[in-house]
Amino acid sequence: MLADVTVFDFETTGVNPAIDRIIEVAAIRCIDGQIVSQFQTLVKLDGGKLSAKITEITGITDADLAGGMNEDIAFKVLRNLAKDSLLVAHNAAFDLSFLHYWMQRTGGRTFDNHFIDTCTISRDRHYYPHKLTNMTERYGIDLTGAHRALNDVIGCWELLKAMHAEKPVDEWVNKIGYLSKYGPPQWAPNYAELIPMTNRYEN
Amino acid sequence: MEHHDSITGQPLLRSMIGDRIWRLMDADPARFKQEVRTYFERGYPGWTVVRAKYPHIFLRDDRGT
Image 1 (cartoon, each protein chain N blue to C red):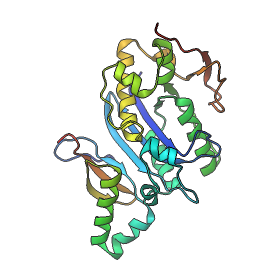
Image 2 (image 1 turned 90 degrees about the vertical axis):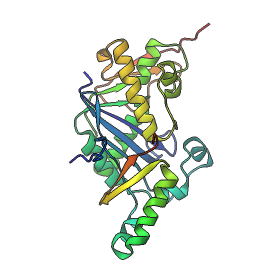
Image 3 (image 1 turned 60 degrees about the vertical axis):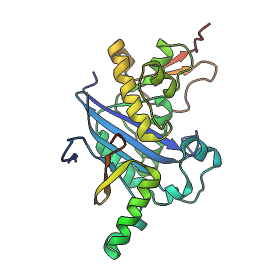
């Protein structure tokens, strides 16, 4: 099931994949349980400045991005790293939608990789909250430097392995859970199964 | 082609830098090295720049050492 996986994460300028931009990319390719390749880059933000809020969340500044790579080259490296592996992200609807819009901008295509969303599994198995930091803590995983993309992908990979050891995650391939009160995500792959969910709270 | 640390065998982190810094590689190699080091010291403290081969900068994770 987890023989060939790419865990990836984007830091972005906002939450709207149609208009906001990716400012940091990180991905690790894991084959037979071992990290065989890891990639991270900051992406230059053409014609814009980071909001104070994003700098506060990510720690990324305009000075950092000034030395970043062009978006199209970073994208090619990411695609070359992931190839047709199983894509994994925490809150995958967010990252997959940014990947889709990114591909649309850089070549008018999209992807057809199978994927797993660890946040959807979290909502099914655990009480609220389900942020990556909450879930890594719950599984006893050390997550240093959250909200920097590389640290988050390594945390997500460890979380996926822990969840799979707890109970196989096979049934969660290509499923995206969303909170009923907010409705389905703005974009999802056409082969995704969208599942309405509600948070469960511990008394 | 994958790149690994020759001692630990761990995969090196592939990262990237912008064109402005790459242009220094031929024009001013000493300044290129300094700019790359400064860039990653700020963005990824604890990682050591191992080598540069366009379009990648390869870094080793020395945070635990």
